[in-house]
Length: 58
Image (cartoon, rainbow, N blue to C red; front, top):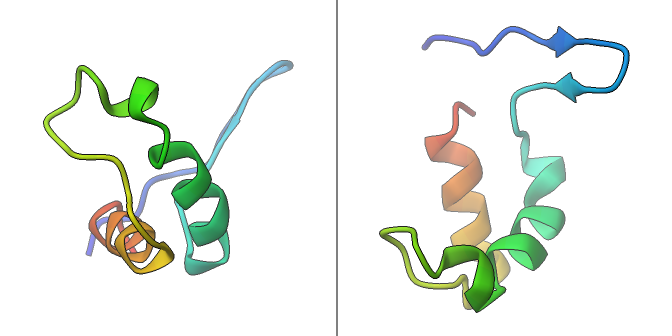
C-alpha cells in the first residue's frame, strides 16, 4: 500500500484520511453541491464515508 506523505506549508496541511475522519468526510460528501460535478452520488450514511476513507489509502 502506498502512503500519501504529509505535506505542510505555512497555510496548508495535507495528510492521509483515516477512519477517525469518517464523520467529517460524511458531512462533506453528503452535500449535493460537493458531488454535483463528480462521478459519485452524495453519501447517504457514515458507512459510505468509511469506504471513501478506505479507497483513499487506509
